[in-house]
Image 1 (cartoon, one colour):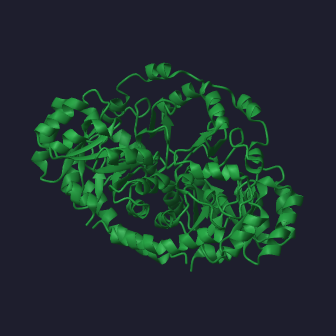
Image 2 (spheres, rainbow over the protein chains, first blue to last red; image 1 turned 45 degrees about the vertical axis):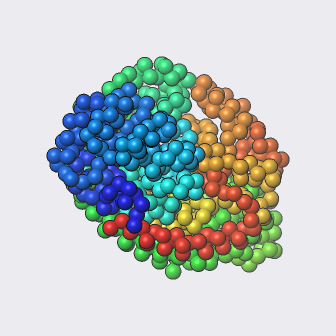
Image 3 (cartoon, helix red, strand yellow; image 1 turned 90 degrees about the horizontal axis):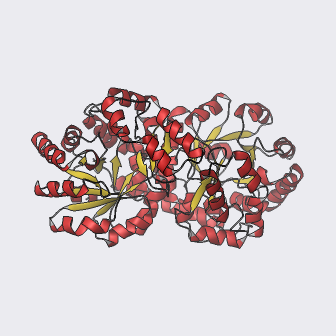
Length: 315
Length: 315
């Protein structure tokens, strides 16, 4: 039995990542219906909106889903409270201490998974009683830690550091990467970028088209000296990187960026001046099929990858 | 039959990377004796020194070895010529166009492998007639391309782009990463950092001790806006990163760095102001056994990793 499938009550050991603006009730329900874990993105909901989104997911599926919540987000407490009131039993937490909420969530009968960028934080999560960690490499989209550890090193380092199960994230779009993650010590995978390009995702078509058009070199990390974010290269990322190279301060850069860039890209399709969070693995994503079809490909292809790895015995 | 083993005439599909100052005749011969490919590092030899090193390797082993050569290095042509005169049949080239030397090396009956950081360059290598490529992710030590593509994405992107075999590099120290590389489309692995910490390596003990002491977060990339290098974090990397954040120019930074930093670290053990090129995977390296023992562990553990991956079937 796969420990993550057991813990999260899912058929396949795959999580559809909580992605700001992208992880809506519709995408979350599609994931739950496909036998993987759906997540609602706390970061793009108020508490009230989250309450409604939870109801909407329930109206569409009896499958498993949870809430993803950056603990430093201003609405975090309200969102966690409304999710608990509505009986949500799975919480993916990030960007904050795993010590603050874990006990209260456990007392409410919920499962707690924390996102970590290093093996050291994985150990702290285990010590705090967290049930599993998402070990996310710096090739992934969105916020990345200043440690910038890549998946192929992070996953085994985390697996060596803790006994709780590891969910691998960062650079995964197909069965090849899932098998790699399992070889490196993970027991499940969290996939983001690949699910932006699925039939049920509700953001702007221009964003998805851009994602489909880039190769593996088409993303950039901005704000790496204070708060790194990986997204598709565009006029915005070029401008920020130019400011960084000119030695501009964090305050100057944040003032330039302002607010709403992520929303502008995802909801309004501003592909030049919006922030298009996205992982390097976009270079391996070439189509926009239904979510269940993506899951089916991963599960079906997995056996072929195992056969290849077995045949390649280096002895 | 493994295409890389056939091409390079080696028993196990493993290459001991050509590492400036570390890849001496002794290390190269130890690799060849262990049934993997040894490489002499062009970058830390003059043509005359390379001639002597080739003779020294031959005196110690009948195994396969080659020469690694950054094509932009000032001694590159002299080194290639002396290696050809001495009958070397394997050339790993990097940092330059694969078009310049490939035909001449082929005419001399040699095999040409080129190091690439992107799938696009892998395709250019294939078009230039190169026999195989090393696809090296940005988690690896030493020079890294400004594209900064991580291994878990780079390897399958390269494998999708070409028919010639892929040698995976960047983040590999054990059988887990080898199996991951094979799952992701590679047919062999090139390992650097792990072999710095072997009994036969001849550099300063202080460098190896520092490598053994760091975790996966212990390296940094400097010069990323003009010529990225990954090495162990120390006073030198902190100073360079501070200059970069202050908006100092490439010329100012290069003038500060000066020459001989890599030699100072490796030969003199200057672990604070020397340049200690090293990959993130140092975090998974904890001992300094004989090279043949490292190879044995990888080959022996491989079967166990395959069993794990097969057992984790996500269906």
